[in-house]
Amino acid sequence: MTFEEQLSSEQIRTLPLRDAIAIDEHTVARAAIALMRTHHLGCAVIVDQNCRPTGVFTEQSVIRLLVAGASLDTTPISSFAEPDFSVVRASDPIMVAWKAVVDSGRRFMCVTDDDGYLIGLTGQRGLADYVCDCYAKQITVQRLGSAPWMLQREGA
Image 1 (cartoon, helix red, strand yellow):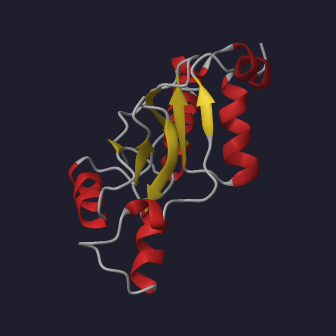
Image 2: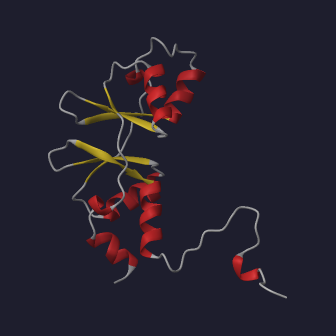
């Protein structure tokens, strides 16, 4: 099976999903940023009362907020949420997420169940982990600044 066939046949639910930070549109920026830092995540998902994604507040949103001089303590995140964000279903083929990353440069995608309820996040990191799992024997990790392993000699 080719890599493309594998992407088309496996579902997004098989990717390593990250827990999403689900927040209300009225949450102030400082609170959202604190949650993002605590969870080591570059975005928070704005959800409605039914836990369906309505937007995302990302690190880029924070930059736009700061450049605009808006108050972190009074500005609701909905004022600076990303206007365009990706939502994929867990039952979609991984190829859908792959194309969103490649074609649109998406870092994060909201993953929902078939009813539209938020169940997690995926994106560049989830896909990179997937590729590493698929090709574990072909992929090696190298420390920054070190010589490529095949150029290092062992022994005398």
